[in-house]
Length: 256
Ligand code: URA
Image (tube, rainbow, N blue to C red; front, side, top):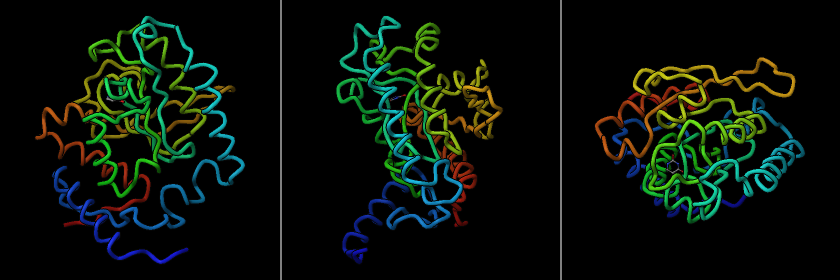
């Protein structure tokens, strides 16, 4: 490995601290994501779901096939007629942590990438504040197509599209999931409870599988970054939720 450039480290540290400050974060996680992860961290641990490169490559391939053969050409609901393109989601196919949002917005529909608009930029800061990078996690949505004028997804649209999300999660088999906002939390947990009631504790997401095995993944519902942009006073609660996720993954935030 080549030795790190101190100037680059200083710049990265400064960016990290700026992100933290903008998020209202007053604590700094031990691992800042500047170095390759040690064995106990996000993708290097023996507990990662796939432990060898052949398994990881297989996951990447299965995700690609799902996207290429089912999602990209999907016409199961009316949203297919208004989209520029589908937005499958992106990140590490072997991620220990998956973020699930609601649906692509304008920027996502144009670029084909999940969470790249204003809400996505805040999500990036939240991920950095956890000491991670977007490349180390997987980011996707319940819906793969943009609803017109970013309206809420309908029950029928969620019903048509959520099998793709279920299949993505079965392939990745993350250790922890974060549902961003009410539609994601309600869909994944099959509940009508409000996000305010659901957030702040882990729930069991039933991963299931071909044999309907009993696998569950701890899922933390939290506020959607778009809501946090409108209600910055709620950021501290979202950070509390993310700190619980960090603890579950063994990423410890020291006290002030
Ligand atoms: N909001 C979402 O829920 N998902 C995106 O990808 C962008 C904005």
